[in-house]
Length: 451
Image 1 (cartoon, rainbow, N blue to C red):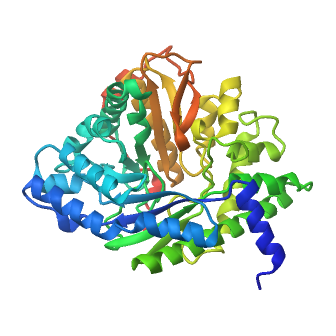
Image 2: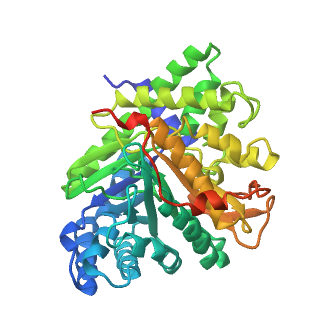
Image 3: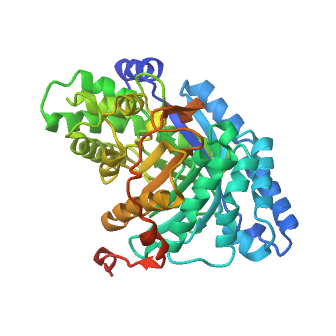
């Protein structure tokens, strides 16, 4: 039974604690849009997306109005475009322009899937698409890109890692007049999930249905508020987080089910991640500080984050019939008010963030680095993160933004959910260039032999 206190608690979560549905994301397969003529393929893509997602934004807004639940973003993810480029040939950027036209028509915030999966090597269309990413993201506003360069089963494609360092740097350079925003729309993954509703890494996996609705929930402010009242030990802290995550995820299940019914599309998963925003009171870092850390980044931060991530998963998984995506706690520096403050004070450094990624949902996310950072250092950062994901059988990712023309200590400001933050120092005293230039593949670990 839902009683008055439950209703009032939910109202408080929404009005005072920044509880929201971060995104409803429609995943659309484009496999039937492949054509040997790239222009015909692009037209098929535009027609299919606008047909299936034409009412996505309206349905999201209607649910917001009827239930009083904020739905911050309405998004689309599509089949990795490199698969279509393999059939058509030609300039892959034409696909990015078609996706942008579809985003403009449907009114969505982002469209993801300008992507390639190269964890075991390059196939037809992969390298061409990856090399085109800087132009594609510079010429479009709402298109997002991702590349999966490793997995626990396959190891790490170091040729792709080397190439992606150059691509990240070039993407930032081509959008330097817009605070290097292009690099903020590009994620490099190890163990990328196929049903992730969160940008910039969302793509529609080949194992998915033709069209599905996935929901990403949020609510760091709700968890932090609940912990303010918790005076017990860490076992009790975990219980409070589990109960709170259950409530947050139930709301996501409701929205996903309702959106699925109204759009006539199967409901996929709820991603029960705690996704922060730059708003005060909506920070994962502040949750860790409510546990007793003086500031996020001090010793003990990784342990606190591990507790948080585990409790979120345990609480949320009981609240939904289908949990997937990333599901846990995000630590994007520029999107989290507490992380921003800790980075500005110097308490939170990239090396500590790397350690934290071993136990969080994703990886090094939304981190501005000096514009002078060489491409091989960016590649090495990607390789380190991929190694953590590969060995620990978890998703890790890198979304770093080389701030062209700026140095450590200066600021970048992206606005909106992408936020702002200080440019964090990177170790440039020595070079990984010879290691990166070797290329080849780092073999899969023993953990891959599970059959």
